[in-house]
Length: 303
Image (cartoon, rainbow, N blue to C red; front, side):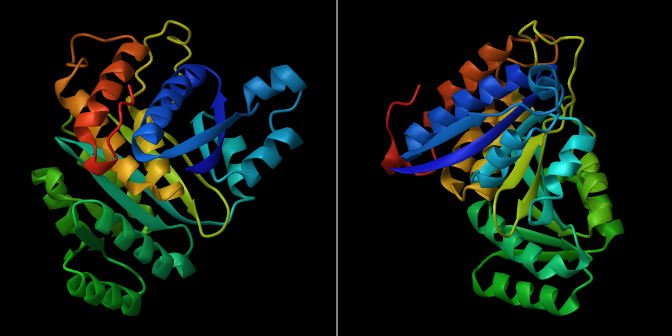
């Protein structure tokens, strides 16, 4: 059985609460798909400052840099930027929950990373619904090569202008699967994708060519509800799914978890009027995992 090491940076506010729910989901997904996740919960940010007097102690730095992946919950952006500066990051990725589906958007962090980003977009499309949309792109040669490969592999491929992408996202966001775009477009496209949804379920990642990639949810610390057990873990669970697929290459497990989250968000406890406890929502996701299993031949009782 493959074992992965994950550095968990819970931060403050609701961070420890939603990280605990992500840990439950990762363990259950691992049992279903025959791998294990060894988590190292390291002090970082306000938590580290209170415990050891420094927001980014050397022990936390070493744990993060030597892990297979990094999962963050509610982290100060300044500190996170300092950590990211030490990672070999090439591309940004956002995953947005849509009506009954999800959309993954990738963008290069550097102009020289376009070809690498397009390769990762192809990988993501193969593991998802088999559709890749390119919104502009500075590297024409790389874009044409990706279009040819997508055609050869039987993937659906489309190229849209920013205006065309905006129109399509407003009209039918659920038709998008994987999108590769210029870096300035990644956040606007994600915002358009979920603008008509009552719930914002969004996860982010920074992908490294070598060493660990880093992932997290879109929400902040939410100090006003911290400790009450009502923090919505949906985006954190989606971040865990994104980490499984893009950080650990456990793409079947990533699909299983993402599908369960999408089902519960769309049909389960959270309906816009009733707010379940954090653990209750995660319970529903775990109960849905066997029904969302991507490769049923590996089925075991996991919850």
